[in-house]
Image (cartoon, rainbow, N blue to C red; front, side, top):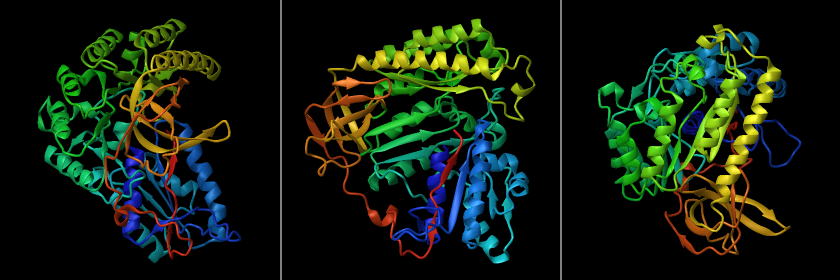
Length: 476
């Protein structure tokens, strides 16, 4: 969601005439490099570490701004929504502070700040425009994110997002389908549907099967090769969604299903309205309907009150669930959440020790699951170039249908293969985090015409008059 917002921020600024700067640091002595006139930090508030990174980065930028007084610094996103005037109190050299609901206001706020020579702050309490309705500069030419909803109606005790993103707002299906059709016409072949709770889509207009219907309709768009979505919630994951995933060749056989904890006691304390038994039953249904599906998850370690027995229940569920990937997090206190006032907060040492045990198990399970792929032929959508092996083997990288990262040998075809192309390769090696395919490419399909560079090209010319700093992601 943050990456999606950042692409919109960049699109807005490019609409003002800004161009991406090679660097935001004023290395004026180096030929070919020019400093940024504007640096935008798009922030997250999920974990405490984000605060530290934000203010540390702002401290670094203060020194750069002294060397270039005309530089403008803007802070947006969830931390801006949360901290508001505190950002200007701690970093008075910031020019603009804007919230999660008014990303589209950034150009006006920058103009006001430059004209008045005074900092501008604007934090709206309700959504002004869906992020996908704003201009965009996509990071990838062949893939795109599309928001189908914003906000969340859940009350998880550890999560600050609902208070910063607001209650769930759903877009009309027709608007979503029109946007995807336009993206496909522009060369996009892969779309990821976004929502804080993506499978509760439809709650605003009272259709409990709206999400499964949307998946089916998206799959009918000619030219769309791959459709993904993130993140669903177990409590809203219904059989009609599983059926839609199984029916459509466009919906990819990958499901990211956040777990958070394998202990029923901790799930209850987290205000997660499902239990481990229901979670595992969902996975069983999905695997029965979609053979070869890969399932990834999120897990929090060290939630207040978590005992060793509770933690062991999480480890047991990881062994049973056979996740392809698990994103693991240490519990982080967030002011304004219910979990802060809970009893039984654990020491950092206990949390760190449990975290290491969980990561070791997750990596071991992922490695075991990836080993099952060795010898299998997989379809990979090309993303980017990777490194080399043995001093010279050129590799490209991409995602298999089940979202596993695959590094494959180009075998002299580097110049002919472009992002978005589909290749079929046989897996020869693996690690817990990726697959390797060093054999021959057995098929190569061009999925798109060359991207219309006039719409989204990034001008890296050092002579451009005005430069946009790379959006900085602060936090998770």
